[in-house]
Image: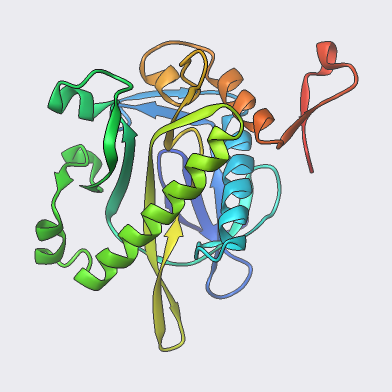
Length: 254
């Protein structure tokens, strides 16, 4: 990792120059932040779990014909991805009331929304990722109307898949955040899913107990973050129990 040229470092990941033109290596850190990076802790093993969960989901999405930047996992913390031009938007899909939506609209947490809602935020930590409208996006040239259509179509397809995936293992998908990018292939350009999908970027509640199994455990000082991420991975079949789980705990499937 140290011999590769660093391209970009964010709060939870580092991008390095890839082994071939048009590729990057995405490294998952253990850094855990809240408040746009104002609060930071290192939680051992979080990056490994996020890498594996994101790999699992992106592989499934690729198999369904949903275009993503993901190529393959390289090791426990790194994956090979296609280099894309990131669109400076966070795309948030909400199925149940939580987080800022509760504060803005005075809804009861966990209320099922009349339909899934897609929101956009402009990616800028200094501005605290302000919510923006489609008018803002097209006026400032962050994305064209046609690109927005592609982004919303991707978001709906991803939501449909993730909702079923998580419900099948007893987890409610409350909301999630994705990012998209422009993938250039010769003279062609298409919008693809980028970044990651993990408990860092989703709100996941246990269907029966409504226990939070995502980054809100850190944001709200609930504790047990790594145990919750491990539980998500276990339910998805990414983790298996060893014969002597009491002493060795779960191991990652290679």
